[in-house]
Image (cartoon, rainbow over all chains, first blue to last red; front, side, top):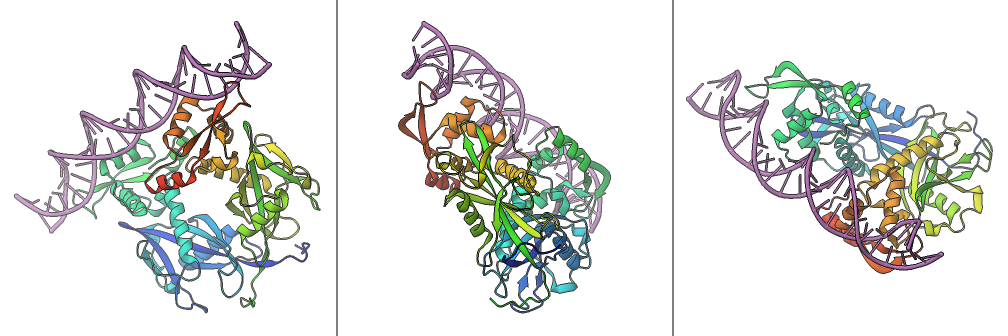
Length: 228
Length: 228
DNA sequence: TCAAAAGTGTTGACCCTACACCCATGG
DNA sequence: CCATGGGTGTAGGGTCAACACTTTTGA
């Protein structure tokens, strides 16, 4: 496309990814060591610049893929950070995206970029305004997880009710009554009970369930209000 | 600041403002006629490019001020639109902001920029992806207005309960039971009843109230959950 | 005196919370 | 046989929705 808007500033545009994962009982965050100056070696979100021929969504997916090798991951925009001096090198605006990745995908992450998982209540100090981004992303998923079934994105396809409860307890850093929780979630009729049991976490074993997305969408059309 | 990130695309960055106002019973939107080609004369949100020395918030406030002459207006980011071809002239990303302005400020708007108010259920077709922006902004204020007292931003300082109810009815395009509504809002203890009555809209007259923001914030700290 | 909007209370249904015991199994 | 986590039911309180009549007053 030819340039036609004249005498107007053009600006560096970036995305940064807040990558959440869930490990048994804790919500975790994937951080990397910044590979170049300034602040080389400091903990940082993974990010990248947006090219002329990609949207922000495209760029976020590309950045996530570069670190994790994963595609088709649940990602959503959080907000854009645009303070003039947020990046000391050059004026850059950056849009934060959060990503939810399943525990059973975590395979070969830790090798590259010095990436490491941190529990959300134990996050080191981060470069630039990345701590603010993490705060904003946490606030966003906490707000959204109450009203939309995004929690399932953080679990393997087959999960147990206690696992799901642990997840929500991890997200909200609180405890939930197990009877009330399972009644509530099962009453929505969006989980399918499987024959199989998970015998890893208990001797009795807990039944596996899976999320029925089509069912959920149909129920939403009929006025279902997902609330945890 | 010196440029130090090399070989990276720099991009035009803009903001567009979705300006909401409330007129008796309807939620309205302020649109302008685009003053230059392409699409000159078509209905459009008011927008502007972001300069090197201002944040997106700064730019949005500047743009709003240019059209309305108003400052210190309630504005919030909606989301960023970044499809590669969304602006046919040159690749531009644009962050949408919504603004809530009080009816009694509307004075000298209509003179400039061919600006005109439209009821939200009667919006003409807009240039580029501006209709999507309006949709996203509406969704956002509907979602937020349930949990945060932003409605007051759209009303004069002194307002009556029936006016407030009309506002929420306008936002959600629905009808609300007046007994349940006033019980609910008054129970929160965030409104102060004034001596004065509004005699314009009825013969009996309705008492004016005003929003006590300090009170609200104190109650929130003590766990108040604002819900309409 | 009448039209038009303001204001006010009660009841039943439902939902949410709190709470404790038995079950199945591996070791 | 025992320790561990999984699974289930009920009762009481609170909240929400539905509903209709009286009041005020300007014209």
